[in-house]
Image (cartoon, rainbow, N blue to C red; front, side, top):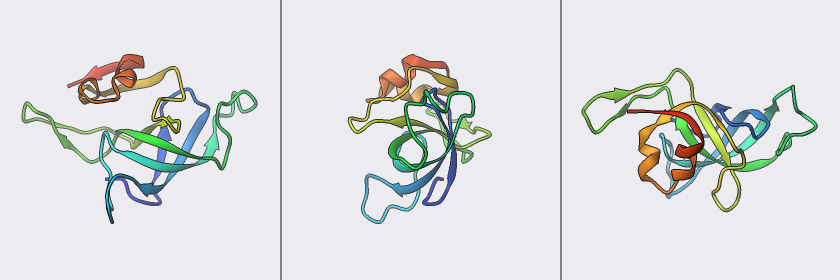
Amino acid sequence: MIQSGTLLNVVDNSGAKIVCCIKVSSGYKRRYAFVGDTILVSVKALRSKRKSLSKIKKGEISKALIVRTKTSTKVYTGESLTFFENSVILLNNQSKPIASRVFGSISQKFRYTRHLRIASISAGLIF
């Protein structure tokens, strides 16, 4: 469950490290977002190694796709899927990923959505 003010880790190579949720998209008075939802975020911290070559700057507002949450989600087999952290991938205005790689595993659910590109550039799929 991600809501306004939640700090999230960025798990791609766009250059951002930590972002803060500003708004949960897609719905009137919608409070929470889960895996697969799009939110509006502000960049709070950059990765120290490549600050000058970063594709995104500190303080920028961007769209983001939630790929991991601490809240468990039901899988079609009846099992639940839980991660250790809340993580996102940054998107541009056309809802395409800014980065070219995604670190760590993501849910297999992305293979069957409009975000198939994210499933193909990720390190691995589970469930």
